[in-house]
Image (cartoon, rainbow, N blue to C red; front, top):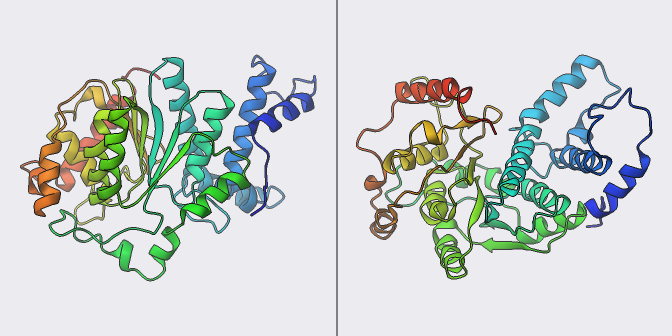
Length: 350
């Protein structure tokens, strides 16, 4: 693959020099020129990674164009040209949280578990490079699609990821493809670490390496889709997130599961079970809606990770200890979402 774009070190000086002196069109008149150029570069990159600039025709009928733009604002749909399924709001969320941990000088790196074609990680690395954050970006993935649910899984219905015709082939993007996409969009692979393998096998090894080197994870982004994959991420990496760090979950589905007999992501079940077991289903750890699909919360205090239960579950094939005594119902989901929505306006502003 060739290089489609240059990196931030090439684009920002060019964009800065292109800016005219007129301010009638300027949405940020008080923003320094270099910062304005940085945001322009990242906006351009995000629109190409999501393929909104490739799919949406600004010369078309206005209503059709705005409908297309809204689709890419929220994400969740696949375009043949996209290297991320996430929308523009999701990418903005990653940029905002990276800027917050940097402003607060919080230690740790950016880790994404489940990367597909690498678009979100490419964008995160571009933010790190643009603002000279000096953080490593970790990309964890099997690079061969999703596995079948494990024996004893609490969501044995999630076999369709591996068995539905064509789905796993689309999800299975090789490490070489992801690395080539970094190069295509002009984003450096320096300080980018690829961690290959199914999470149940790869993340314990990564955990040991990070602990041995006294490294932390400032932002942990979960995109594992399945229940099993999500508990693998949480029980291996959550305690490496320092207080003040952020956890983002891509496959949350804000309203999924809030009505009887409606489908919900296994990832949503997994993270809510994890929060209940660890006593963090509270106002301090309030979930925030990103775009109707993804959500995030801030780690506000340390907890004793119940990792021994997870290890026993993996070894014995019995995961019942990882679920609270009462299985969540649709009413429970609806109550939780109402609480998150009500509390969001009162929570500490970021």
